Length: 126
Length: 106
Image (cartoon, rainbow over all chains, first blue to last red; front, side, top):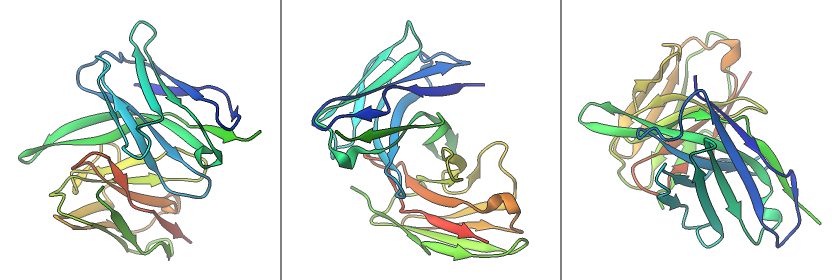
């Protein structure tokens, strides 16, 4: 059973870079069937997709964050990571890593977020 | 971006009730619609994908339907563990976007 675990600082100063890592256990990040990604949730608010990365390093970012986001994958460690630079208080949130799986249904192939980490709270404050 | 709008934002119900949550997309997304349940302090959990396909291990009292722009999540016979916040999410077009959530309360 695949499990994900986020790690990284819980407090980041404004204008600095937020860096988080997600460690995958119980399965290989190099499986060609999946993308890996990040979602965040500000306090008392809804969910925001940050981006996805494939084992090859191909990335897809939310346009609203694209100028500040970098994701990368380390297959030797079975990890993927998120960097978000120039952070402000608006970046304070619970950050979740997730697996983006898919399945055929009817005539289409459908993607969904089927495995999630427990989440890590990141506060941006001086 | 495709905007997802859920209604209602909150809902009060009792154990055993049947509840309906709706999700509307700002443009047609075929059936590229997923539903998640989130309990306080926990990560979201996938319930339904492709608008109506039940994720493995999810009780059959959860049912999804809809296509194009209008979707519905129905929970038949509410159980105590179902009181949570529910989100719809479209996977038709990048960026993936979520509804604002529906909080289901006792």
